[in-house]
Image 1 (cartoon, rainbow, N blue to C red):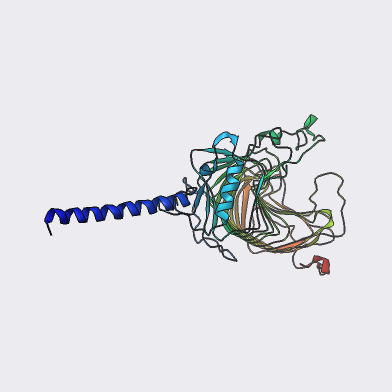
Image 2: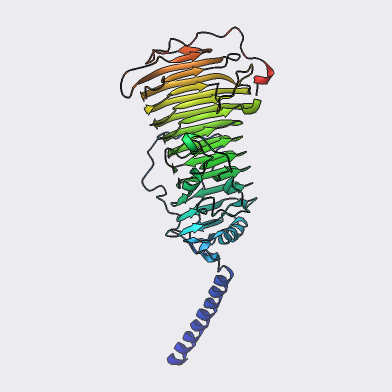
Length: 471
């Protein structure tokens, strides 16, 4: 064959192949035009009983150092592709809803709110069931309408972002969830917002910021969550929750802004997080089992609380709670168990270990007379507190209150309280009050500072055995 003719044949053949491949690429791109090629982070598995990390590193300055967007994937659904504006003013709710629907329908789908944008969405329930491995990734800023006046009248005022009936979901990113809580905190019904430091009548519902409801095998990591109108994050009726490397913050005097609240939830791990807010740093409600908290810094706050439990004569069951390697500073309470008179059930199997206190009132407190008004009466029933250990609790306390306070029910004593290696010294000034005990029984494995001479040895003559104290 003539060399020139042979070259022309080869050239024409290659051109046809290139044109055909180009057509195929365009066809594939058209089919996936609402997706972007960005890697989908694989959520870590959540153990049924999370174990604490062997080391307790501080929260890094970059809470999400391994950006998942460095390789190719077809399962990322960028809200910008669904009409989101991201200017902090436009309502981007519809774009998030559409991105969620498509991500929910594929395995390891990712709803992406990208960096350098501020998205405003209204109260919304993102529900399942979805395919496994769903990720809701916020790298920009996500926020609700600014205050009660802007809140749509048709929307619930009790919650904002709700994740419902999901399994194997991750909520993460390097971005910020901004609650715009200031105008909610200033409602006259809020504590001490009325005349002369009182509260005033009127509508008082304020939305919890993020709520997970009836879901399992959840991971929440890396995010900054701030200025919630009410609770920052709630878990109701969930199982298998891993929380890691969160930063949660709101002003010290912001009312009812608990950092993380769990109830009727089991197998929870909360690790390597920093929380400062106007209420409980972490609150553990009724129906919680197997909760492990490690390497958390709280403060200013109201400390880490189990309760309140037993309100309105209800039954409350909480067991196997461990808090280790925590720092609590400038807080109204340290580690607290709080129950209402007249409740039933029990709190048992509690360990507080290796906790550093810095200028804390009520460093160690059991309060079985918890009440929000002066009308509460002493009743013959209570939530039974048993098997609580305080080990290596050290630091400084605010002398306005005793550093150790065990106020147990007249009718149902606290039993099996163990103190070991407890050293609490005045932050400023001198000790004003000795530790307080009422109907509290237990042992001191080592001498404590200050001495707890009021703790009774052995068991009370009548130990709670009635069925209403069982769980």
